[in-house]
Amino acid sequence: MAVVFMITPRHPETTPGNADASSLDALLVPHDPDAAALSVFDAGAARGDGVFETIGVNAGRARKPESHIARLAASARIMDLPAPDVSVWRHAIDRVVSLLDPERSGVIRLVITRGTPGAGPTCWITGEEVSPEVRERESGVRVVLLDRGWPIDIADRAPWMLAGAKTLSYAPNMAALREARRRGADDVVFTSLEGFALEGPTSSLIIRTGMLLSTPASGDGNLPGTTQREIFDWARQNGFETSSRRVPADEVRSANAAWLVSSVRLVVPITAIDGRGMDVDAELTDRMNEHLLALG
Ligand code: PLP
Image (cartoon, rainbow, N blue to C red; front, side, top):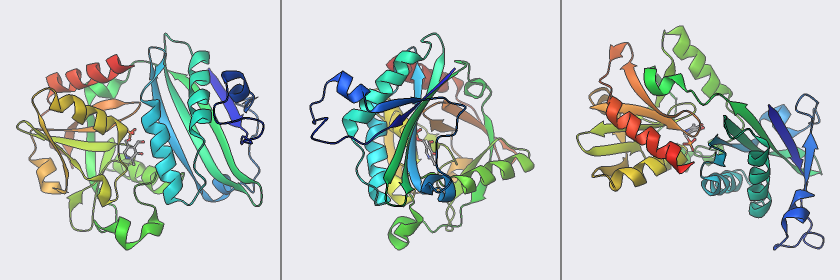
């Protein structure tokens, strides 16, 4: 089952800031998931010029909607798009969750494109039901390290590359995943030109060295991961130290354990890097996934 709402911009005179649920509801226009929704001239369709968020739904609850709306706003800021209307998006997420089967898991997407010339941004939200079983949480993934072709200071050196924004331009990330499959692997850890580990095409990287969990810093061109942040909050309350820093690729290879983490798959252990097996910390993987699923 899938649901789609196109979101109409709100006018302060007709829908004030403290609008009630029914006036916010009026801004959500139900759309047939199989019907065309966009102009071929929409900048999102024609150029990938827009931003998005993917939110996991477990046990009838969206996970961390506020963090995702905040990141949508941060991505919009980096892209010079107007600030998203937080209460409209918050209401839209609740509405979509209420339409999904609480017995199943779900994926919600928020999308803002630069729209068609003169008309302002195009906004929509989708919700889909998915199986609650995610095989990779148990089986793990084999990764390859792939050069992203970026220096570690990409965000300062070339802000127009939009590093750290969740833009619709994911074609290079998808190409990297195809390259991983060609090399007999399942997923990717990007590296910087200097050989620092960065992130996956759709996930953040976490490594464990003793009781220290480390992740490549978001200021270094990586998307600030909402799942990684939740895990670090939990880890600090459970006897671990945490660090966001530059992580040389060699440290990933020699770590006690490593994971790719993201909003829908959650915590997925890395079982091999460039064909060389890696130790898996199955117990810690399970504890982290249980914590995230319990948050709903
Ligand atoms: N990095 C990239 C490039 C991503 O696309 C994603 C998620 O889609 C992440 C990291 C992980 O972010 P989150 O944990 O908020 O899903």
